[in-house]
Image (cartoon, rainbow, N blue to C red):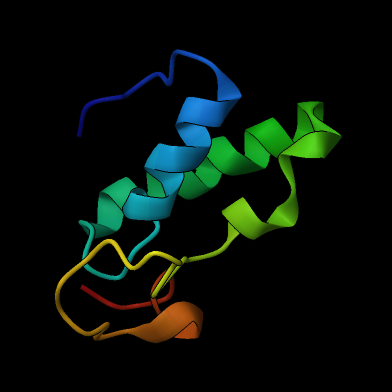
Length: 79
């Protein structure tokens, strides 16, 4: 796997994280986004805990299909 560094401002990361923490996203992408969000949490308390969890069915809903994994199982699924 390639290492990816997140660049930009935190507001843009929040928008991307909503899509990347979806059960439809590739598992490795979800885990990397979760790790990046945890790093942000260490340094910026205003980031909020809402972006540190899988975001199935965000408002407005961004994906067309139903969630196969759900919020609890999305980051714990076995591939």
